[in-house]
Structures are given as structure tokens and as C-alpha cells.
Length: 530
Image (cartoon, rainbow, N blue to C red):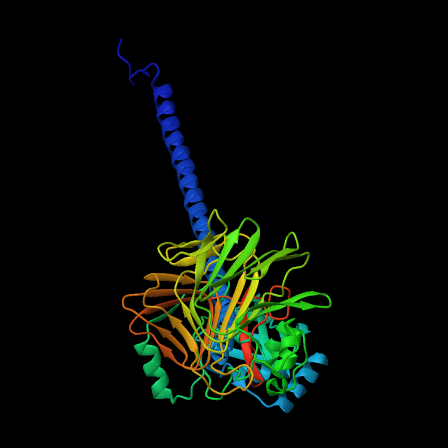
């Protein structure tokens, strides 16, 4: 059959509808993907902005930290520079000493200001481009302690600082606690790490430091390093009268006023105008025992340890004296050519010798009770916590090690186990009674060990300190004060150590002949960041 129009194909409407449906689905997926990727892109942009802001905050925080740290360091360096350039020890008059003592009693700061050469408060402001920092250092007396002819003042030097950036309103505060220990008056000479008591111009001082191989072993507790100090005016005392008074338990206005008869009475000898016989005398006092007095030269003096007893042996010619005492048991025995005596007291620990000591060192107590000097090895010869002071008018020659029990050396650095002892060795170079100049000083013998260790405060009047021999290393845990120093090309390694003056730790020793100011210590205790 013929049709005018072609017949409608079955299903054609549905095919067109499906095609349109596919086109709509692609559009929806495309829009969805576009939205997803747009959201992701926007999220990444937002996250990057967050990271940029966090990075900026961290950068600014670090810069603020740098600013506050610079403020603290700049303030402390200002203090360190002032202390380092100030003369120390600085000689002052008796009148000025009394004025400063009264100011300390009134809780003033003049002592600290005069010792360091600065005035408080110290304010510092610095700007570097957009970085700004400022600090303020104040001064206040923490405590003070007076002793025989001098005093110790401890000052707190709090440093308050802050850093900021020019473009930000924020500030970063920080603080540092600093303490300074100042000695004033006739201070113990042992407080001075190394002092050359000789008038030298600046060029001569530089030559002295360059020519002598002196090394200071630093302490982890100290910030300011020890150094050689020079004193043009005489600070090492020529008179040993204060030490004689303590040892003999008498009052001495002038040593020349002590007659032979009076001295014999003090020593427990028969009354006579005859000179005191050469020998070793243990002083008896109303309260127990005093010091030890020696008349004449000593050929050999040996320190040793026997159990918990400190042993000191004296040999002069054929005669030997042995002093044994135990601080823990409060027992003493004294053996002399006349026999042995025992006491329920301990001696003062102060030995006065009117003469020379030809050999001084550490040793051992043998099975038979004899005390023998040991030079071929290091042996402990001083009890922990012992306080001994040896004063001789003439020369003292050190021939062996003198170290305490519990002391060890690791890579040249001394470490003490237990309570630290203190030994003071002082040669005056002056006759005890007439105070006339004689040959004196301290000598490190050429026969002493090549690596000699001495734990003591060494004070040398007369001809000063001389190291004999070649290729030696002298290791000192303590201090040195001397009128002259001859190293003979040998090395000196000095670890400064001194107890707190005026305390039970401090041994009896010589004090400066004139009042001085001395900055004993400057140390930081606590750094805080807020």
C-alpha cells in the first residue's frame, strides 16, 4: 500500500530522549567536578594562606626571641666588660674602706659601683633595622658578712629585658639573675688566683704574660675567666705578727717586744734569757692546743695520712718530731725526742717556722710508724676537709706532691670527692721577730716530679716563686701570690679555688697589707623567657 507519508519508525522517540538524557548527565558531572576542583583549589589557597600566616608568626616569634636574647646578652656583656677592665685588686685607703663598709651596712650599692666602675641602674636601648631591644640592670645587696679586717658583700644584679618589632605591637620579655661577690678590706691573699706583687708598666705586663706559660683551667660555674693580676703597691705582708698571735695564743703589738724569756715561757720551757733551743713545740693554751712553733731550719717536712689521722713529720738533723691528730675523734699525739704526749684536743692547724724548710712534700706512714717522703708517685697526704697553714720566715722548697685524699685529675682537670681541704704555704722573707729582710720565697725543686701536683694557696715573699728544672708541668689547685715568678721555661696549670672567706671552710692565712677592692666572682644563676 502506498502511503503519502512515510510511516513512523517504531522507537525513534525513545532514542532521542536517551541522547538528551546522556547530554544532561555529562553536564551535571562536569559541573560537579568543576565545583569539586574549585572547592579543592579554594581549600588549598586557604591552607596556603594559613601556612603563610603561621610561618609569619613563627618568623616574628623567632625575631622577638632574638631581640630579647640580644638585650640580655648586651646587658651582661656590658657588665663583663666593666668588670674585666676594672683594676682588680684595687688599692683603697683605710678611710675609704670604712666608708664603703658603712654603706654596705646601710644596704647601699656604692661598693659594687666602685668595684665595677659603673652606676646603677644601667639602661641600654638598641635598634637594628626593624628590630628593637632594651634592657635594665639594677643592683641590690643580697647579704654581707664581716670578718677580721674585711667583709664580703653579695649583690643581686637582675637584668630585665624585652624585644619587639617595629611593625608589631607585641613585646617579648626576658630576665637574667646575676650575682657578684665583692671583697673589701684586708682580704685573704688566697682569694687572688694569680697575683704578681710587682710594679710593672703595661708593656712589661704583656711581656710577663707572653714569656710565662700560665694556663688557667676554667670552672664550669664561673663566667668571667681568671687572669693574672698585677699590684704595684706592696700587698704581701712583711710582718707575720697576726699569724704569730693566733699560733702562740698571745697578743703582739710588735714582734720585737717578745723577749727570749717570754717566748720560752709561751713554749713551756724553763725561764731563762737564753735563746730558744732549736726544735718543734706544740703550743698549749687555756682552752686546749694552739699552733706549732718551730725554731730553726727543717731538713724535711712530710705530710701523710694514717687512717683518719693527719700526720706531719719534722726532721732536723738526727731529731724527728711527729704530730698526729684526728679532727673526727678529737685526739692528738705528739712524739718528740723527749717522748710522746697525747691530748683530747686537736691543734689549731697553724705551723710557724723561724727558719727554712729544705724539703716539703707528701709521703706515707710505714708499718713501723716512720713517715717517709714519696717522690716517685702521687700519694694523698692531706685529710679531706683539713685546714693547714704553714708559715716560714725563710725559703720553702717543695719536693713532692701535696694533694688531699679523694682528689683525682682527669685530662688535666682536678676533681675532688668529698669535702675539700685547704693548705696555705707562706714564705715571708722576713725574720719573724726582727722583721729584717732575709732570703725567702718558694722553690719547686729540680728533683720534684715532672708533673707536680700541689693543692694549696702559695704566697711567696722575699725572692718570690721559682720553678727549677726543665720540662716540668706544675699543676696548682688553689692560688699563687708572689713578688716575682721565674718559670725557667716550665708550664704552670692553675685551677683557681678558694673557700668562702670568713666561713668555717676558710683556713688561717695571710691577708693583704693594704685594704683593697676585689671582684671575687660574677655568675649568672637563672635565665627566664616569658
